[in-house]
Length: 464
Image 1 (spheres, rainbow, N blue to C red):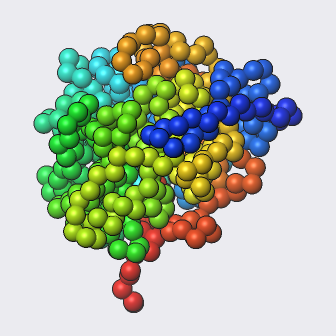
Image 2: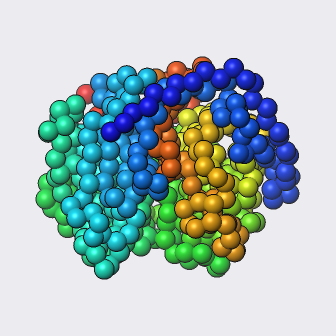
């Protein structure tokens, strides 16, 4: 496997053309209309490429996940259509290298997207990686939704081995997205999109008790005008004030917040639907204190929206369920494309965008977010992407779906990794961002990163 170290020092000051637009009345967004960027402006001067690894075939790179333990410098890249994953060592971030590749048996016979999303987790002192899969009928393994690997023995790749496969015959099509959460009751819970959101106790699943490992399903509340009836992206977080575990789901109609303190009996808290401009939620990520959330709709020309969740929580305190239908802020790197996945490390939001690569914005003032850094990982033609060129009708053009798929952030040192469907794997740093802990910002230390040894930050623990 060839490896290219493309560390670059940009000496040209990037010129951003900022446009103020109004979304839902008086909502301001800052938009950079500079894509594709002129020669010499591939990245802002404060974002530096450390490593770049091309990953082969176009549209074979899916989401990305980085381990958080300082002693385990590994990133995992899901592989679309080929169905598998790569493990990349970033022990030396300036010289990242692929140390392990796995592909499903008879890969060419499988139908569907293959390996879309992947997450690592820790359980009983061992480390695991779960690769989600999506297969259609007409080929092998249509009922296989995910595959768990034991990766405890890394860097000795001979010790990486498959443990168990999720088989979900009642919901063909597999797991598109997954989220793994260390619940306040100490269970490690998998949230997976498959006709609603399915919840699994991973401890019981790995012990061989697949039936008891299944906890239940969280369905999308019925809403007029839904584009779909399921969830797309998933997020769970603990609130130290109320001592509640909460689920944040994006899907049919918009976005939904649930109390999952008892996962077997989820309770809807409030909804965000009937928002002007879209009828479907793609990704929904709260800030560490749960006060605000970023919503993505996956339509071309649609910015990321920022919602204030305060009124929803206030309604819950009154014993009511309310709906929020208005954003307070919005942001996009380029109004002609789509901002895809994102990671929140308050006050920063790290965004992987189709055709725009990595962008980073500051949301300290949620009504006026602004770009603080970027690096464009995508170098192909715009609006001619994976779905067969421009056109397609409706609210979007299929041709923009190319470029950066996923982004992840390593909290202890601030390292940023990106997966790009066309250009592969990237490692970058942003000046001044040398790690993240929410407490440094007066916030709970909550993000997509899980503390598998101690449980959620702020959890009231018994005195020993």
